[in-house]
Image (cartoon, rainbow, N blue to C red; front, top):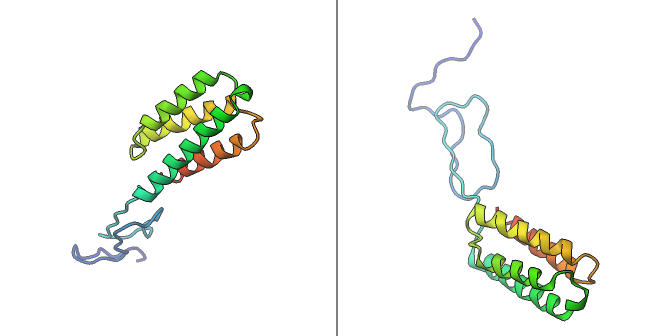
Length: 127
């Protein structure tokens, strides 16, 4: 008769992974195989790079303030973004949402839109 034989409980028929692996999938039908992963992708350099991008965004908004719709609102949103703990998925989502609103209000300001897009991409890459 065809079929899968029962594996002894101490036997691993799949793979054992640990560490930082990004997205992985276990072997289909594996018995007693284990995986663990760290998708945080966060280190001090990543967070520092985002902080520097936010400073540049703020400088750009200040420089081109006459071209920015609702300057005070944009500055308030940026201040709120700076308060978010980007290690937290929930706060990272808040930061992205606020930056998207700032990006909408800065549509057409040369250099600022691409800088905001770079900042959004950097925050998205943390996930």
